[in-house]
Image 1 (spheres, helix red, strand yellow):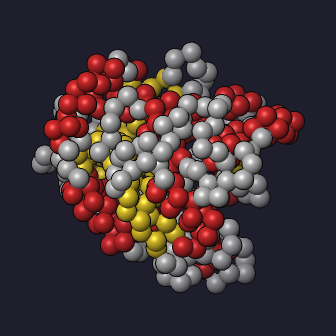
Image 2 (image 1 turned 180 degrees about the vertical axis):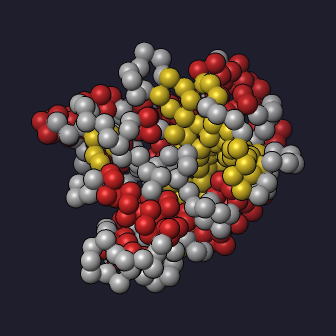
Length: 382
């Protein structure tokens, strides 16, 4: 495996290095956890508008050899800072402290301030294809930053899994493995192909090219809900009826998508203060066009409107999948199907009982149930 990967890596290196000048450093190296530092870069995309820029954050060991690298694609509204506060709830810190450099992508959405009140029509072009291409650009820079021949893995959470599968289809370099964290790509039981044209027409008619994190709360109100929870969870609730801030947010998150679907702090699967810190990092806007793209790609084996699934069924890369049982049967089966039928002969499946979606990455059992198995899986494939 190591020799084959090194050969392919060298073959792709020239193509990858062409992207390196697109990125510039954003600040200096910071220490963020014991034996973990972070570096950040920004890139203005060619021929793009005001907000057409992406970022990349590298979490690496402060000392010791880098044994492998992981390219991470966040979920909807998430970015390269969206994780827990320590090794127990932060995959980036956990892996970096053990010699795995983690490159986490900041999507274009991070460039849009939450108080932006102009037209969001520019997000019409922020398609799934566009974000996959952004990821491929950032991957080229990341690979050029590391030593020649270093094994690169990819990972995604939630919608980042779909973007990750798209990246596997178009990437200029091979991956040593893919980690799918509670997300999928192809529907396990597709019917008729989704009518992309009708979906786009409906979206254009609505004029709603971006969703926001909350329709009922302003950004500031939501921020205060999160901040008060993680700074003083036992303090008075904002709603005037819950026993505390922690109780208010716990109930809100538990009921958000259905009982325990988004997160399950009520049963002690996650800590509401950790969830609040995570949610306070989110980007406010996200392009709705990707909902149309995702449904179209998921509904058919090869969507003729895109190239991000052209190699579907031929992705000969090891895959490990972690799914939250509370997320629902359809989501779980779609995640398992996507991992099992991508084309890999090396597939590992983990189902996390009583876990909600966010509990996979920041739950009380994330270290033992997700991070440690992931590290063992990576080590076994180096």
